[in-house]
Image 1: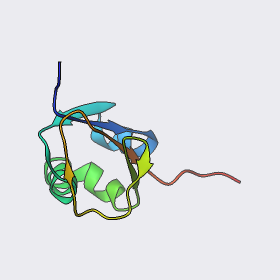
Image 2: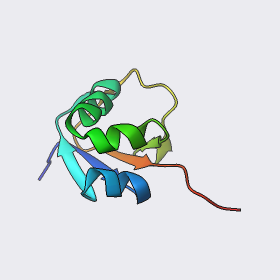
Image 3: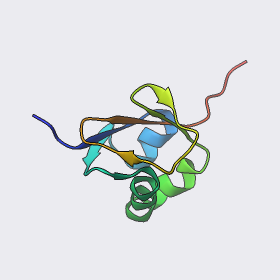
Length: 81
């Protein structure tokens, strides 16, 4: 069964979103991220520092359509050394 676009949250993004994953309809990548920020104020503060993967590939250009069945990973900066 196809539930649209799956969005998975990791680390601080997961804490801010309050969920591990959610689903949305197919749309422009920028629109999906903008809607996340509008609907989740805590996530909006974290997402500015996040990087994104689309189907396990790093997102550099945000001007494209994300199709049903795709997976967006929201990855905050990770500490390490």
